[in-house]
Length: 135
Image (cartoon, rainbow, N blue to C red):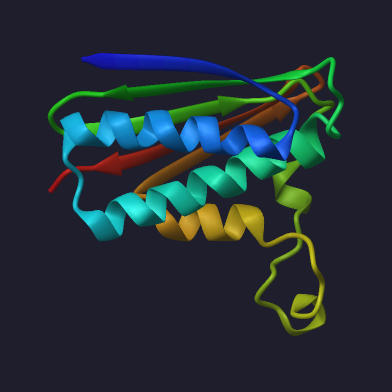
């Protein structure tokens, strides 16, 4: 099992650092390109959520990331230091009344792009787990 950890500042420019280690990890895992691009997009959405919505771009807060993989699955873990939120209260971005809203799409996008998604959130922050299974 391989594991890579990276701590990011609460700044959108930090996402490119994560993208680099994600690409390095995939050189070993060898995910098919379409799945890898989907995972990149999902991770970017989760990182934006962590930096912007979780940590409110507060420079004193960090985003903790881990990439863990073996020959059959690739898991990305992202955790912020925000105040948390109730995932069940996020409106469905596909319902008519929400189609033109600019927020609320991130979680929906993440779920649609990975094989498994989990989000846990409390007053100590939000943790996202994204998993891709090699078939």
